[in-house]
Length: 341
Ligand code: ATP
Ligand code: MG
Image (tube, rainbow, N blue to C red; front, side):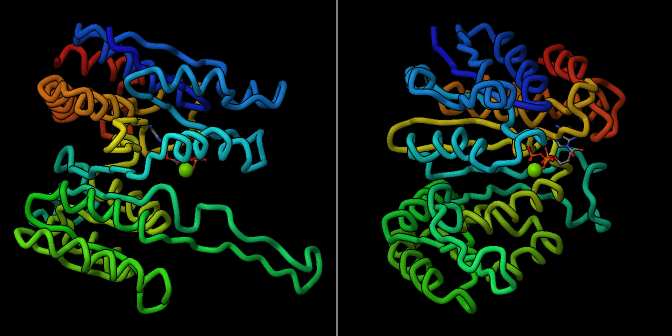
């Protein structure tokens, strides 16, 4: 038996993760789920608990983590999400955030020109540094001179390992994205790592774009990208853009991984979507496709491809939720994938 730790979380998280478990279970490959259903905003509001040490032990002993979403409008403090998500990312050192964007069906593209719709790229987002390190502070608080500072931290170690991963993941080309023309210090470090690591990959076409141009190009000619590597905040923004160009947030999957230790956390790109939570209408495909990425990590490539194929066929047959042009609810969309399998 292979144990998967599951954190359903908040909002639509439990609804979509349940469908991912149904699909994974149906493969009959001996997966066992250790569900941490107490890690959510309700527990936090009751007694302040987040991800306790005993939970971390359970998470560490599994072969991978499947997560729904963390976030609740009743919790205003950013500490709640930070203590769960960022604890997992930092303690397990999940420095690669791997976000594929592949057009599921032609009708889902927001682009007018049919010849330019075929996005099939991977966004590799640095996941442990940048603007997310919580270094900074506020001075003269509450006055008209209040000044807030959030430092962007980049290290040679952190940048070179994520660039190295992106270069190894590509078959044809990698595009490095930064804003070195305006953000000088981090920019120069990214540029230096890019040169140093790129030398070992003469087989790849290596390009560089400033983030503003990259955003434009992702809409103008998305098929020109294979692997994009960038920092934490640009990766956050560009991956939502790429997900939308690929047909929608509800079907976008992601993996937070440490390629050396093999630790991995798999989650849909969308969040808790409180506006539709409890209505049974959430699209479970992002969670199901995140489960497929977990299968990749377990070495179950055939099963992973089978799940992706089943999702493709369900979308093509409009056996899907409203956001993808179907009429099914969450559970029926999950069942459609199972029957396509
Ligand atoms: P969070 O703070 O947890 O990220 P959010 O309010 O930003 O939550 P998201 O989950 O990021 O909400 O999603 C933004 C919007 O996209 C939602 O309000 C919802 O309408 C839509 N959406 C997101 N995920 C899905 C899904 N799986 N199925 C259908 N619609 C979705
Ligand atoms: Mg969100």
